[in-house]
Length: 369
Image 1 (cartoon, helix red, strand yellow):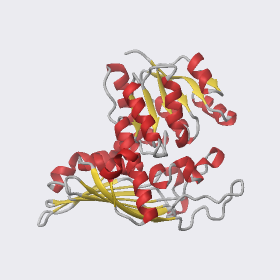
Image 2: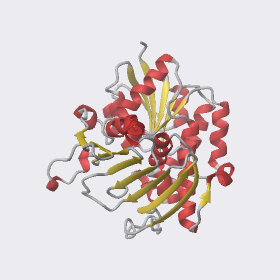
Image 3: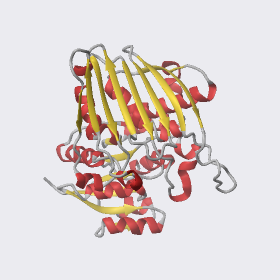
C-alpha cells in the first residue's frame, strides 16, 4: 500500500491527539500542519518533525504536499474551512465533531454533501471505544430489541482551550452540540432508528460563573437531561453533569429490552484521574439476562500504547485505521456528512427544547436546522 500523506488543520489538544495516533499507523505520514497560533504550531512540530508548517490555511492548501486532511480546529470554523478546502482540493477529509454550530450552517453542509468530490468522514470517536463497540455488537442479542437506552456522562468541566473559544455558545454551538453530539450519534447508531421528538431541561449550575473574558461571563451549560422518542418506539435519555471531578465512571450506557440489559462503564482519561483516588479503573461490560440466568461482568482490555496516545481509550486510533483503509481501498465513510448533520440537529433542537420548555418535533423542524 502507498504511504498516505496527511495535512492537519488545527493543532490544539485534539489536533495533537490525531498526530500521536497517525504516528502509530503503518502507511501514514504527516507532511503538513496548519495553526494560526504559532506556539501551538511549534508544539505540533515536535510530534511531526518532518512536516511543513503553515500559519495560513490558504498557504497549506496551495503549497502543502498531502493526500488527506484532518480538521481539528475550533467548532465554529469547521464549515468555513471545509468550504475553503473544497475550492482548492478534492481529498479525503476527517473532520472533527461537531460538523457545524448554527442552524443556518445546515444548508452549507448540504451543499458540500452534493458538490464536494471527495469523501468526508465526521470524527465520532465514541463509536470506536472498545467498551462501546462491544455493547453495540451484543446489544440486540442480549436485550431482544432495545426499548430503553440511557447514556450518562459525569465528568470534569470543559478544559481550557486556546482563546477560550469553548466558553461561549456562539462558538461551540452550545453544550448539547459541543459535548453531546457524540451521544446523539450513538443513540441513532445503537437504536438503528431516527428521533421524532425531543424534550430537555438544562442549566449552567456552577461552572465558569466566576470567569470573565473581555468583560463577558461564559454562557455554556454544565448539566441537564435530554429525552428522545424514536421512530421504532424506543426511548433514549442523556444525563450530563460536568461538575463531577473524580467520578469513577465518566460514561455509562445502559440498553434495556424484554430479554435483558447490557451496560458499559468507562472511566475518564487517565491523565485527568485524581492520583489520590489510586489507580484509574478499567472499562467494564455487564450483561443482565432475565432471571434465572446469572449476570456477567467483565473487564474490557485496552491497549496501553493507544491509551497513552490520547484521551479516548484507543478509539481515535481505531477510527484512523478505518479512515486510512477507506483512503487506500476507495471505500466510503462510516460516519458521513449526513450522520454529522443529524447529530448536530439533535443537539440544537435539544437546546431549544430546554430553553423553551417545549416538546419539539424533529420532523417539523428538520428543514429549518
